[in-house]
Amino acid sequence: MIVAGVGSRRGVTAEEVCAAVRGALARHDVKLCDISLMATPAIKGGEAGIIKAALDLGLLLVMVPQAQLESAGERAVTHSERVVALMGVPSVAEASALAVAGRRSTLIGPRFVLGPVTCALAREAEKGVETP
Image (cartoon, rainbow, N blue to C red; front, top):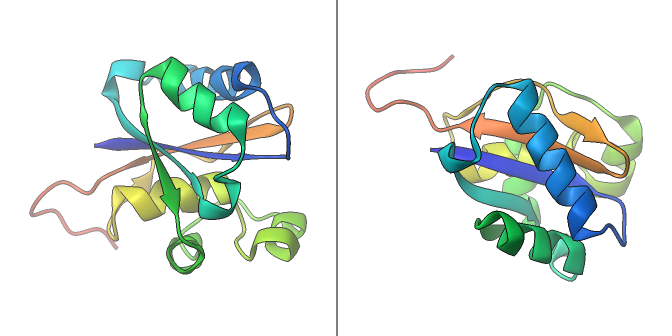
C-alpha cells in the first residue's frame, strides 16, 4: 500500500492539489494506480480543494487526527520550523502519509512541493520485514 500525504495552505484548489500529487508521483516513479489512499490532517477537513482533488484522482481521503499526525511526524525526513509552529509536526505531508501507511511505513522520498501544496508518498512495511 502506498499513501499520498497532502499538506497545503488554506484555500488551495483541486487543480493545485492534483498537480502536486502528480508531481510527487513523477518524481518517485510511482503510478497513480499504485496509490491506495490520500491523507491529510483532520484540521484540513474543510478544505474543498483537497476533498475535490481526492475525488478527481479517484482516491479515498483519510483525515488524520492530530495525535496520530504528531506520532508519525517523528519519522518525517523534512523539517520546517514554520510548519512545526503551525501544525506541531515537521512536515504535514510526510506525517499524514506515514500515519495512514502504518507504524512501520517508510517514505519513498522527501515531500514534493509545488506552490501552496506539498505531497509525500509513504509505503506500508512489507509483511515480515522489520524496519529500523
